[in-house]
Length: 480
Image 1 (cartoon, helix red, strand yellow):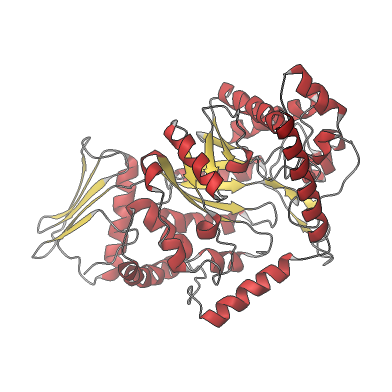
Image 2 (cartoon, one colour):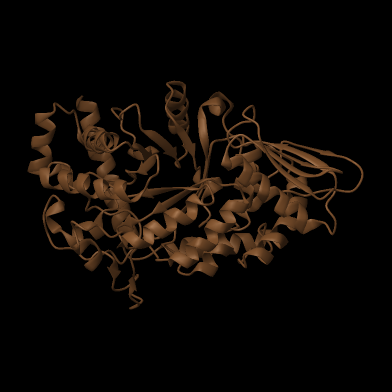
């Protein structure tokens, strides 16, 4: 019995010995990413309708060959459930080299994942070269310390680095989706160009994690123009259909007190600062559209007035957000799912064990409107590539199986996982967590240590500021 991951749509076994002939046949009736792999007494035949399908057929054949001394007679017919099957790596909090990223991209290709979401900017680092604004990498790419440890973290990707990664991915039919987070998670940009904030004060690249009060000033034309300039260079570097604008975790405390933001509210008859964020985001969406790109935003950055053409990536969960998700999906909004309780791979295995990731069920009301699934790995507490791999694998394997195959049996998945883990560690030596479903006590200990690590002297201050932000927003909503 063959054990293939992600699981093919159908496998039919035959009899006899596989012949020596090798044939590749174009079949336009097959789905774009689908294929038919036939091993019989004549030989090997791959039927496909696009080069993507041919590539995925070869990946399946590679797994089959690794399991068998002699090839079995078998017919595999396959196509993915979702067109969007992604993995996000945060390179802003900690920097990973191009070679380290290529190793993960190779694993993605074997898993038939097709979107590499590259988180390139955040409060703790700006990692992409922008020719028009050299201080972004001269200043913004260097963090002098992390929570007082005295160790410098630096690095950025040049235009040549990005071209290298994009081409490497293209050879594996993976689209690279860059993320330039705005208006929140913007401290590294403000540290480079202080005038981008409401107050204009000099900041340093943030040495702590969490949510930050200092965000891009939506009231200043120079900030809006800066963001459009950056997106213009980004669009020229990445041939992707999508550019991610972030939009998450953007407290409005500075906007409430900013004369520029108040003026912008009046000019555009905006009811409040939430609508101001929507205006700002829509400006960026329209600019990307003029460059031939579609925008993606995180769901807490999706204002009530968000442009209908933007895709929304859902990471937060609550009853209210679930209702919003259903509403947006039914309106035709493109939806990408990354629920943090299931698909955040920086969370300890005790909080999000492998079975939990595998067992995630898409709400039935929106299943037909979901574009795809994405696993995310934020790197606040992931400082090297070995830790990244131990956190991502094998949970990413489960996500890939679900994104390609849909619902499945966990016991069957575990059998296939054992075979695939051996195959992938032989082919691309990566670190895979051996016991992704830890014992009860170890799991609880891991979760406790995770939360203790998060806590520092800034935690309570940030919590107070967020409560204040929420109170002010609530008062303004009542006035409306």
